[in-house]
Length: 279
Ligand SMILES: C[S@@+](CC[C@H](N)C(=O)[O-])C[C@H]1O[C@@H](n2cnc3c(N)ncnc32)[C@H](O)[C@@H]1O
View (cartoon, rainbow, N blue to C red):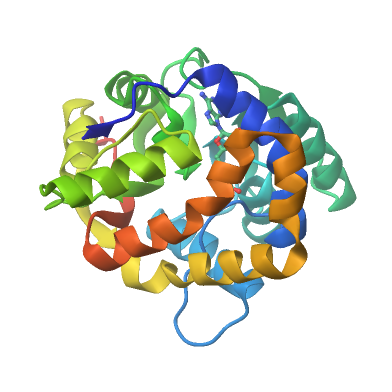
């Protein structure tokens, strides 16, 4: 695991309150990478990532899902619409909570979704009440990842699944240059640490879950950052960011670092599906 101790939780919340509009305009309702099989549009690629993860987690009608770090509700709304399940989304950002609720009503799934503003590291649910704990690109922001996995595993009923997509420190990111790349990404994207695939599997297994295997999607998602960088350049968003604050400029400038970190192997992108053994 590579750490960036200077990151503070208040800054994570501030970032998402401030930047959600930019994410929506530049990227769409999902704040996560696209998953490409060929030359699909970025919007299609984002939905493909959600669907691929949902297939691996065997999400089906009636499943009760907790979407940890739900952003604008992209996954929760999509799963409620396409798989007829119910979803509770948690986000640290009050603005995102309101945005997600409004969007769910707009898409006519307000009765199958609920959005809560809370810190996932403090949030509590009854044990064994959930079919799927789902989290796309949020665990990077958590400070005590091991404790989160232990708690989230308790929420799952026997036979329930955990589906996680996460940015990872590369398994072999041992050189000073690679470590610096990971550190720069953590700093620019407000992640107190990035775990390796090995770390993630350890946290899940220590929580009593069984992992079949993890999926390394790095080469299929990396294009995300070429597109985002191009859109930032063309849109003049960086100019606007300079008026807002230094952190937002740094965030935009680290898109290239992240892309390069995938190329060098300093970082990877992983999807993990784990299961709670049946009683
Ligand atoms: C990269 S976005 C991903 C959003 C969403 N999963 C999606 O795919 O569209 C990260 C999300 O994690 C949330 N987040 C970060 N730290 C959090 C925390 N401690 N508790 C709850 N949510 C958190 C942010 O508010 C944001 O919604």
